[in-house]
Image (cartoon, rainbow, N blue to C red; front, side, top):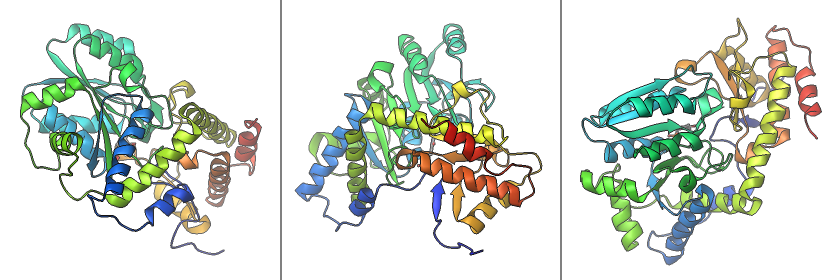
Length: 387
Ligand SMILES: *Cc1c(COP(=O)(O)O)cnc(C)c1O
């Protein structure tokens, strides 16, 4: 058996993951000077395309750094010492936002559920009517490490009706599942390019509402910093000048990835993710494994989380899969390390053949490691689920 020790032959990870050849081609283009009119027009168009994907008329800011930069920047620019923020926690990223709240001097008010569950809007309603002086609500849309999807739609509308500013981590949901920033009342929406948009990591996409801008300006936040969202507004959005040398290749790639998504159509892309996620879940169950989310209705559609079978070691399992078969999948993250593994289907990789190949070689690896599986059961069930 050949050992694949360099590039994976195949990747079904939770991002970065495989992308469209046209995005790769865009990445390999000649670099442009930042005030080259062609680059400026690409940058501007990328923002306009993102408005369509996020379904918003709010400003789009592209920050230089990974997606969590946007989460930290949102907290640092909006939350002042003493501000109370209702932080909804249904997983690792939800819990993680608490750090940014406290680092900004804010007071987190936590509503937490088990990490295999989602936040119930009726519970949020109770907290909203009981707690006084809440200023913000923060929530993760698709909690990627758990493979679950929070009902951000209902939650944010309620929070807005109570006069709160809403901050949503939709890093892995945008492009794969329904997201309507304006209709749902999302003040700050943070999105990552390397998940369902199938572009590169390293750009942070933010939509910022007028309410959020008003507060940011009032807060008089620190300027000329990577965390300053206002620099981007006053320089790029208002004067067409970049605060620093922008991330040329990543923006060119993102622009291409958005063309591909918009050409497919948002509804078609969402349906494709739903379909492939269903095929994947059927395959997992067919193999005799257990899905991590409490029930299938709360699953997200970009990342199938699977309980680690008893007695199986995550490192050994995924290393075997990678070294023997060249297949890379994601393990658990944070508190969930060792408890689950994930087969992802995001953007370009949300296709049946990706899921089928991952399922087949997960099945083979389990068999190699002495875990009782009947070869072909997982793939068979997945094939049955395909119409
Ligand atoms: C991937 C992810 C992030 C972090 O994105 P980075 O680009 O690694 O900073 C944050 N939140 C969620 C829900 C994610 O899936």
